[in-house]
Length: 125
Image 1 (cartoon, rainbow, N blue to C red):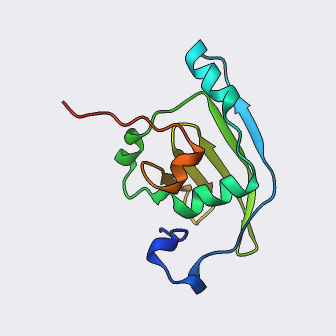
Image 2 (cartoon, rainbow, N blue to C red; image 1 turned 90 degrees about the vertical axis):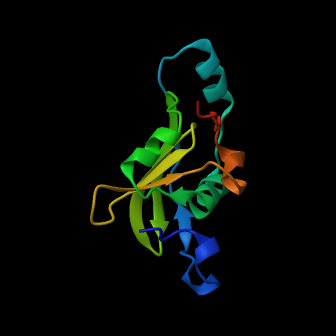
């Protein structure tokens, strides 16, 4: 669907995004992950920037590019005045729910959105 990527749209088609709520969830984990999760803090502008600069998933297999950490930031946002639920995992994946299908996935492996996640690139064997 790729409705949020400003690099491939003109300025008039960039959606208006307003973050309504922010809730950080951390699950029990190892010390390394716990330390990363406790240091991770996103504000409304960070969340908006993440979704405007991350890349949309084209296939479900692309989700495997990202580590899944035991922490996420989630809440509600408005896209062009339509309320949606969102979540962002520290590992670089994010979702916006309610687009006529289950979810719209986004991932961050390069660019400005890397400021808001902990992405570890792995070399292929």
